[in-house]
Image 1 (cartoon, helix red, strand yellow):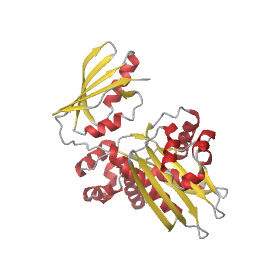
Image 2 (tube, helix red, strand yellow):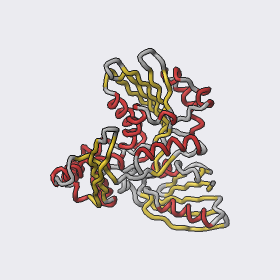
Image 3 (cartoon, one colour):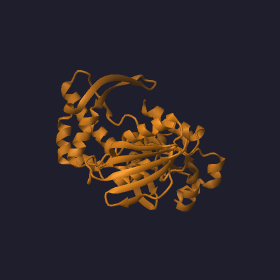
Image 4 (cartoon, one colour):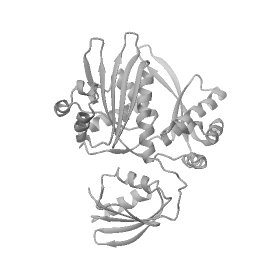
Length: 359
């Protein structure tokens, strides 16, 4: 699936689906695409393998610092050891029919995870929350325009799309319908009125919110400011006469670095003896039972699990984790089918979690 299709689907989802969908399984985490000059140059291909591996490591971890790890740098210099498949394709663009060659590279997931485990770098699981983006652009005459799902083809939106894809950050653009425009104006977004923006964001049920204001100077550079809101935190970034691409890149990184730190997990946990007793009520159908077990089996935070009891519509499981309890709670919170029915309790090496299954 191309990044254009992914981005348009996110915008389409905002318009046509209930605005309670707050997370998505991000595809293509272990795939990288690099532009090259030739299909025949082996040396260039090997360099491209390294560039593609950097893309993958950035997407899998969400953290720029991973590329500075010594063990990771050594692995990148031998990126071909991690390559599963690769292929070339020719892309034709524009009225002048300009062509470029792209090398698409897929990497062995287990090998990449082993590398990150060895480096002690946490990974960001595939199930990731949407980040709602409020973006306002001011022109030379002082006019201000909100950008949303209807402006997905604009220059700023395309740059935002590209940087979000590089970091594997799912974006959610506001519909900017009558409800949105009643809730917040372009001027209020420009003024970074956090209280009003949070109220306008409530319908999208996203805890991850990126607010950006952009003014293009006559020289083409940007005066901009971004605020990233995540729960009770607010992080700020300012740009003074820098390229638009840099401002967009740094704004997306501001969100991704903070968001991934909430959900990233170490594959080798701190305490492998911790057991989680997971009780789920409301599982009344065979399909729900199968979906629940399939979901649990795919949790990156869980090494293994056992079904303890099945009593009417209530299932009790024991999950064996690596001690990453906070990350487990955060990850499950992204699943809209599991609604917490009580607080998480911990007694020494046992943790008790209770949920209700809801379709």
